[in-house]
Amino acid sequence: MKALFIGGTGTISMAITRQLAENPDWELYLLNRGNRTAELPQGVKVIQADINNEEQSARALEGMRFDCVCDFIGFVPAQLERDYRLFAGKTKQFMYISSASAYQKPVGTYVITESTPLHNPYWEYSRNKIACEEYLMKQYREQGFPVTIIRPSHTYDERNIPVGAHGDRGSWQVVKRMMEGKPVLVHGDGTTLWTITYNTDFAKAFIGLMGNVHAIGEAYHITSDESVTWNQIYGIIADALGVEYKPYYVSSEFLHAAGKYDFAGGLTGDKANTVVFDNSKVKRAVPGFTCTVRADQGLRRAIAHMTTHAECQVEDPEFDQWCDRVIAALENAKEAVKHG
Image (cartoon, rainbow, N blue to C red; front, side):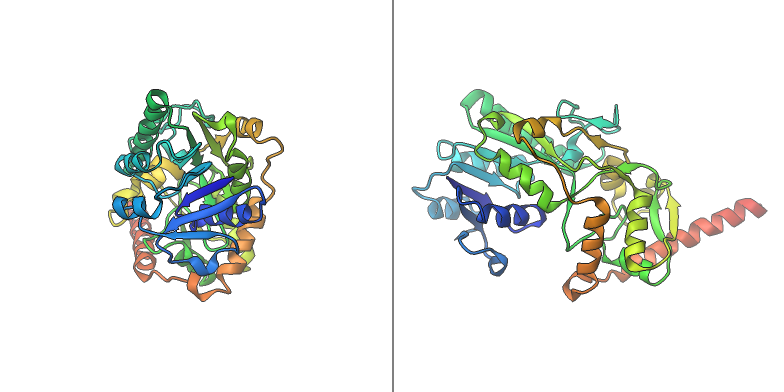
């Protein structure tokens, strides 16, 4: 069978690319700009084009048909409208990576199934994902376009660690603060439950849905069955670094109101909510699927990699100084109230 990945070299898609390359049943093509081809496994064929240039992509794909096309980098409906024009009648299955952040916020119940309503007033990213899903399902209902929707939650790999509040340059500065003995900002009181999924686990279920007749016209989330608190996540990271965990608890609302970073979406509309995912549906479609990388194992793997690879150590002094200002302001407020 023949598959085409639009993208194919990101956190989620690279794990799928690597696993699929070892599967003799699949011939894999990637359509991308060719920026990370050196990391690709043998046998993967690259079609070099910018998917955002529809005419260029149409020329590059001329005459080709696929059993499965997967778009990992579609964020707004216009991009999925382009995909429909490019692949309608040319693929037996079109898989779209949406987001579990599209599920109802504030949560009505903490147990999330695929029938949980899609509604997120806090985050434009999530609303755009919902609009993309609605467009694709309309094409399925009205035109028979063979859509499968996939909703990842917080999926990570060895190159990044899941944290709640971070700056514009990634999570390394949070790690660096820990290593320097500084307190780290933790939203709420750190006791809400969160689900983190290692990308190699995600890939197993995703591949099981490729070419799967039961997946057409359906939506699935793919996550670990394990839920951990944010205190546990940060505590594991600190333990892996051999340092003390020093949380400084701040409400998500205050972090957003402090102005510099947009935490309304990423926290209020996502990470600040306790969510536990029911993966029964994907397990019925992919018998035997289970996640095997526990949170502590994946986080230790990420810390080991990041602390030994300079390219992962992207410092963010602006975020570091902002954290210090937030802490100082709240400490001053405590003193003012105490002695006022």
